Image (cartoon, rainbow, N blue to C red; front, side, top):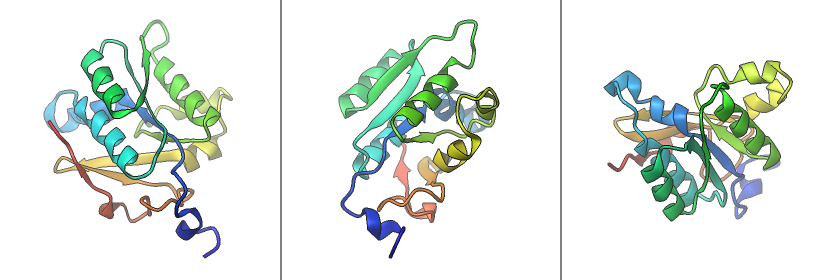
Length: 164
C-alpha cells in the first residue's frame, strides 16, 4: 500500500511537541480548572505507541509536572511568560518545525504566529494533532499526513485513560 500506514510499520513515529498550557487548559470548560495531568497522559500515550521523541512545553512553575514528565523520558522545555504572552507558541512551532515533528494543540490563536512568517500555514495544518478528552480518555485526531501504525485517522480507537 503505497503512501499508507503499512509503509511505516516498524518505524518510530515522528517527534511530537505538546502544547502544555493548551492541553491543561482544555479542562477548564469541564471543571473550571487546569488539568496538568492531561499533559502526562498525552506524553505517556505517544511514548507507549512508538514516539521516541516527546517534547512538552510547559510553564516553568509547574515543577511537579516537569518531574513526572522527566521520569517518563519526556524532553521538557519550560518557559516563563513575560511581555510576550505567546512565547510558548513560538517555542512549540520552532521545536516541531526543527524536529520535523507534530504539534499537539487545539490552540486556535497559534496561526497568528504563522501570519508573521514564522511557519508555513500548510505545514501547520498537516502537522497539528488536535485532541479531545472524553470521559477522561485522550482521543487524538491525527492529520491526514500522519501515516504511522498507531495513529490512523479513526481516532476513536486511540484512547488512554487519564491517571490522577
